[in-house]
Image 1 (cartoon, helix red, strand yellow):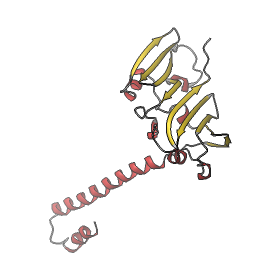
Image 2 (cartoon, rainbow, N blue to C red):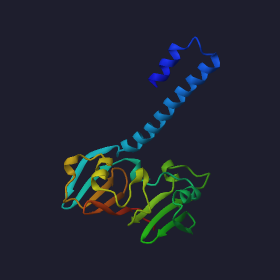
Image 3 (cartoon, rainbow, N blue to C red):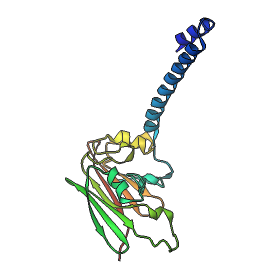
Length: 212
């Protein structure tokens, strides 16, 4: 970049307007391209769990973390329709069960099982919570790397990397920790990240949703 700019300055009088314009465009394109790539890598590397509450506890072999981060509720992203969720989980085959007020979506592959809920709303009814318009997770059990959560969280990753992403101080990276439990600070949802020799071997998500 420095050499190109030097040539432009030294020979500016000898260049036609068109030649000068082309050189400047090349310089700008090269600079913008490199910035875009770097920013994309940086954003992926810098994601950490937000709204981390003060409560971090160790109970036997479990590290408990409380947070209000949206990731707890939407670890695959937010979806308002079944087609969008199907595209996100394109490698899994869904079983769709419809009721009067909701639709159950069960995705399964090998030992992996993901259970989602979509409620049916009357357009004339009063809205009680916009977030409930999204498809909700009911339960999840992932045992291999074929199913990946947002931010590339997956079976097979190291405990140290996951702790960094969850914004947990390094002092909690102990060999005695076999389970990381994420607890919602708002409503009843729990993530369990189970480790075998500091490698993530299973992901379990549970909720307290109740259907009479």
